Length: 167
Image (tube, rainbow, N blue to C red; front, top):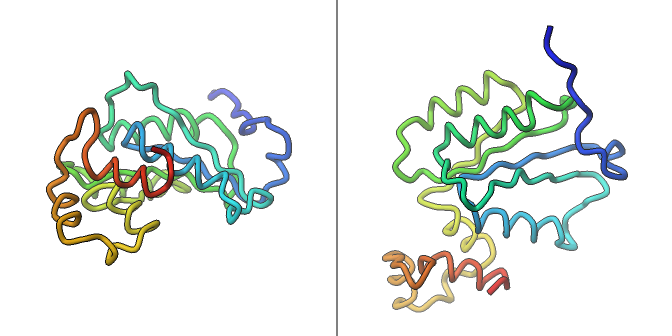
């Protein structure tokens, strides 16, 4: 007999929300920063939606989609009670992963689990979401496409973070 599932995140007012959305990421930095900022945005309706981000320690390098799926399943889906309106999302890049179709199918089979795939990477999606790309110079567009490492971050990550005001 399986153990009984808990109610999710006994924080105040969580049970009154119409929907709970849980997010798990492939990335360890930009995605968490962006979605945390989204939660704090004046346009986010936190009276209706409870957004929970599954955090991964900086030392955790298990970023392959199968690991993101396993984390979302074990730390949320299998552990807590969710309603039919609640959603569990994994956010991953296409990168070099060959098993994306398999991961999408596993999410469909599990029910209530979804996949958001950014191509080629989350930072491009973020940049296109928050910036007017046509305002970038041709030189800057080329630098974005090359996406060279600058210090401890790639160029695209620096531009994306700058665009949402976090560096």
